[in-house]
Length: 291
Image (tube, rainbow, N blue to C red; front, top):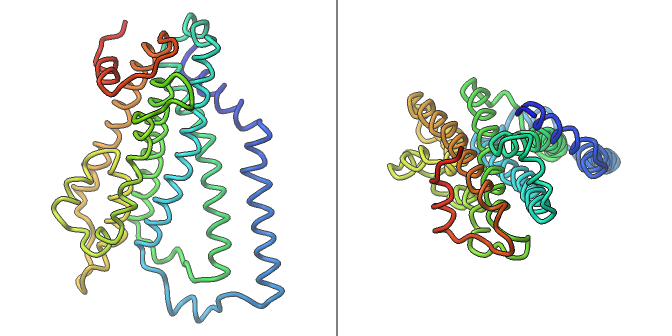
C-alpha cells in the first residue's frame, strides 16, 4: 500500500462519517441561516457607507486566521491522536505495518485527516465571514497580494505541523488519560496568540523576527507580522520578502522533520505496552535510525 492510498483511505473514511457531515455542512448552514434571519428581521446590519468608512486593519485577518488555524488543527490533530491510540491498543497497526511502511502510514494519516480538516476549516471560515459581515465591515479588498499568497501557505503548512505534533503525542502515550507533560506539546503553536498585543504594537522587534523562523511559532507570528507591519508608520511597508521566503522554507522543513520524527516515535511506541514515553525517551526514539 502506497502513501497516496493511505491518504485516500483516511480522507474518504473521515469525510463520509456522519460527524464530519454534520460539523461541516449541516451545523454551519443552520448557524448562517439563523443569523441571517435574526439580523434581517431586526434590521441589524452594516450599510455600504459604513463598510467603506471603517475597513478592518489587516492584522485582524491574520489574528482570525491564526485562531481558526489553531482550532481547526487542534480538532484534526486530536482525531489523528485518537486514531493512533486506538490502533495501538487494538494492535491493528501491527498488521497494517506488514503491508505499509511506518512513514507511509503516519504521513498518510496526517495528510488525509489534514485534507478533510482543511475542508472543514474553510467551511467554518466562510460561515464566520458571512456572519461577521452582518455586524461589521470586513472587505477583502483591504488585503494585498502579499496577504493572498502568504496567508494560505502559512495556514496549510502550519496546519500540517500542528497535526503532526498531536500525532506525536498519540504515538507516545498509552491512552488518552495519561498524556502528562507530553500532552502539552500540541499547545505550543498557540503561544503566538498570547503575544498578539506585542506583535501588533511592534512587529519588527528583533526577538519576534528571530522567533518567526522557528516552527511551530512561524505561522502565528508571521501572519500577525505581515498583517500588522503596513500599519506601523505612515510610510507603510511590508515584512521583507527574504524573511517571508526564509520562514516559509523553515516551516516546510519543520513539517517534514516533524513528520519523520513522529514516524520514528510511532514505530517504537506501537510496541510499548502500558507505558507512556518521557521527553527523554521521545528524543531517543526520534533520533534512532529506522530500516
